[in-house]
Length: 113
Length: 114
Image (cartoon, rainbow over all chains, first blue to last red; front, side, top):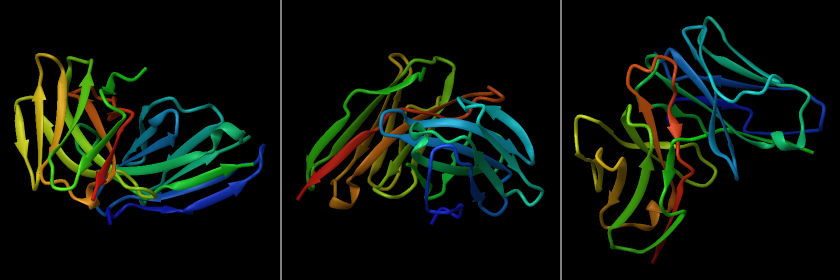
């Protein structure tokens, strides 16, 4: 167990809908990262928050947004969902802002039908 | 695009043999590297890391080798066991990059034959 908690484990929804994925980092970790994993793209970095502030942005679509709350948990919001958004979404956390190992949650499997 | 890649997408190894998983990186500014193991239905799990001031680092049954000259990273698993069957990812980070996160390769699937 990495100490990173993600909910829900599975999510099935329809195109055009909006969903929210939740992540609680390891105790004491200030950074939260979101990654998308699909069969043909591997692990793609979406966005990072550090102590409540956006720290880095990757290939995150405009339809997607995230935030980190004062208690350091994070939410990833996916809207106007398309079939191609179906993927595993991982949250990871680390103590500081970068150049260190990340601890991953078990992921949320999103299926858009 | 990604600057981290893998030489072999799949690797089958006899139980008890040693496994070697390779990774190439293209960013010469990368100075921190990590290997992750991902089992089916689970998130990536940290195995071992190495910084660019080292050429070799050993863990329990695992060794990571770094060749900065040819920008090559490898993971050696000794006495491979069925429980080692998983997808292995290398990842790189650029020192003092500020806002650059870990970049992952596409992964190598290791299958252990009993």
